[in-house]
Amino acid sequence: MRKYQLVTTQKDLCRVVEELNQEVVIGVDTEANSLHAYQERVCLIQISTSQADFIVDPILLEDLTKLKSVFENKKIEKVFHAAEYDLMGLWRDYGWKVTGLFDTMIAARFLGWNNLSLASILWDKYSVRVDKKFQLSNWAERPLTKEQLFYAQQDTRFLLAIRDSIIKEFVCQDQWLEVYEEFDRIARASCRKLLCKSPQDFWRISGARSLPNKNAAVLCEVYKYRDKIACRLDVPPFRILRDHVIMVIARECPTNKKQLGNIRDISARQVRLHYKGILEAVSRGLVAKYPDKPKRERVDQLTRDRYQSLKLWRKSRAINRGVSSDVIVAKEILWDLAVLNPVDYEGLKLVKDLGSWRRKTYGKDILKILQASIDRQY
Image 1 (cartoon, rainbow, N blue to C red):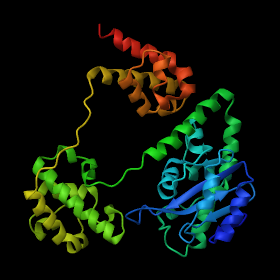
Image 2 (image 1 turned 180 degrees about the vertical axis):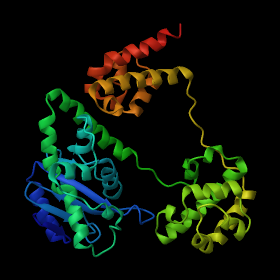
Image 3 (image 1 turned 45 degrees about the horizontal axis):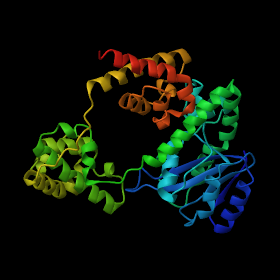
Image 4 (image 1 turned 60 degrees about the vertical axis):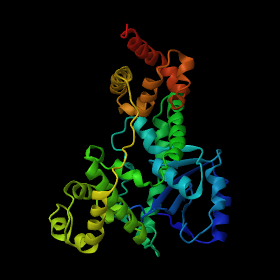
């Protein structure tokens, strides 16, 4: 097994960037600290070529500007496995729009592979066993152990070989057009999905919208308390109180320490540390102005019917190909089709993420389904 090269100085980074700029394809992965920080960040960037494995340390390297040219160079193919999360982190932390994406998980799904996790593929194809305990590591802590760095190396060490195996399974150029359009869609979508924290985020908790106004106001105040403490301690909010616990607090509105302690799934330690802040938040909520629920866009029944018809068509296509339904068309694209209800190929072009391959391959079917929904109106 070849050794990894740990990159912790600007001198080393310059050398690595020079090497990477000579490559046409590289394997990439990142490690973050989402389980351990209020605002997660990229903590490692692993990069493999056919000859070497580099582990770039963003914690020790404050300036990674030189790497931007590599990630935004369209001539260098970047091979990830399940790239979406990594792309979001690189965009959030550095403003990098990764180009030349090849996602081995997406490609494997298009081929109908059953075991899609990187750990499963590494074991099935290379008899390499990955210790999953390192997925829970706090990657921001330094120093990292040799075991952690070895784990990080494995995440990119075999990506180029997996890519080559996938390429051999694609039997025609037509399939390549389909999968590369999906790579481009994922890369664009990853930059759009970043959301800023908002005091209104409590509405996203499961069941929040169904609460009576009084209880929703309590939930809002308890949510804000939790977020304030998590930010101060620099831990994820769930480490203070989990969502389902603050939902129970909002429903039961405890007014003393004993009532709070009787709530299911709240620990004695949480009560001891936070009872005062929680009870004060409940009190504020009970006298607060009722929060306005975010308005949901009204959708007419005809749009819902078109969406269901398109889903049935997609399911049939997926079964025939032996792939998951969203390999045919992602559900958000189906929804755009149902809402826009195009009547011709020019109209299909307005559904940007549909892509030229799907428009050409599935356009006739899609327009037929949409036309049938129009005919049923009359």
